[in-house]
Length: 349
Image (cartoon, rainbow, N blue to C red):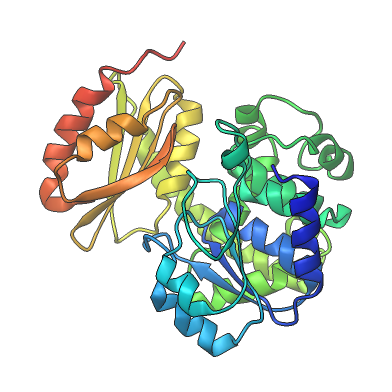
């Protein structure tokens, strides 16, 4: 979490920004972080950072030249190239919660630096800065989407009992209560045609309540509701197929092709809750690569690294939630290795 000095600094920088540029990850945590900061300062532009990019590199300088920001805020992005920092020639404020990086000439805020082993999504850090009670639904959704129950959950329940009536364990709140739909909404609204995604996010910067969407209380909310229903129906089709692969094996493996929408992260998240004793590996084949999301209730990242060693592969992430990209030519060898690695993992009680 941020300390009082960091919060004051970021708040001042947002309040005095004339034309800030926000780069944010294309998941629910990244989106919620952007919405909180943008709705606080009501200035600037947002740019989505696609997950197929390894880092915020010099190719993104084109956006800097186009928008000509006075300040840059980077949200929930694990890596920034030093070349981007040096050539951007603007103050950069980087909020993240992935393994800490060493970079020069950047204002870097990561709770893992002073609190190793802690877990605070970027949304949590952003809400520490903004503290706007109207946005409690955005802050809570972003945190829970990244698998954390925030310490302000009771305030959310009081304001929005239509989504949660009481505090329970995280899997129950995420997959057995109406909160499930709000979390999925933040993920799914980022999918689809670029024009529709940008229109949806623009609407989100202005919504006063999630009920504009879920109770269709405004024309803009109805637009978002129709988009969500359409995308969610595609998700339900794919996860139904994925559940069929749950056998007695410790590994629950599900592969699908690029003829279907990408829901790799969401499927992995849901299945690890529904099958907590299994290691979940969801892989989508695209352009000669297998794009993977891996989940487990025990640390899995070392098993992933060992299985990738020497192969045409890259990956990383959190101890129990990882991502990887494996060249299709090495896929069979990776699976063979990974299957052996997970045999060494402790059993989930």
